[in-house]
Image (cartoon, rainbow, N blue to C red):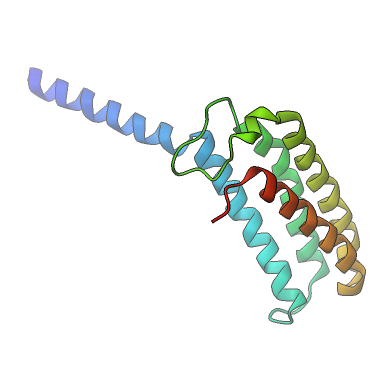
Length: 145
């Protein structure tokens, strides 16, 4: 009986550890970036004519990206890096600048969401500006693959 209780305790601790690992800041921020990448891929497919243009869908994609930035910047507590993370150490050295990039992306997504219902031609300048902000942040704070 004692061995069963110990085995159950060990199993519970292992399960809790796995759950905590899934909720780690690294996993959370990777999930946000994956979702944001999917949104950009969707809108890019509209620009390429691979999907029919839908201004409401594009606007929703940009709003989701913008909304994610508030949580995203909170997911970089000191030392939250690993071999599985693409975050450069510069994030923690220049946290204010990193946060400013997120603010810029949030502003750019708001402009893109506003322009999206007007069609591809109306959206293009805002989409280009957003791409430059994303690229700038990635160049500065993300390990290049």
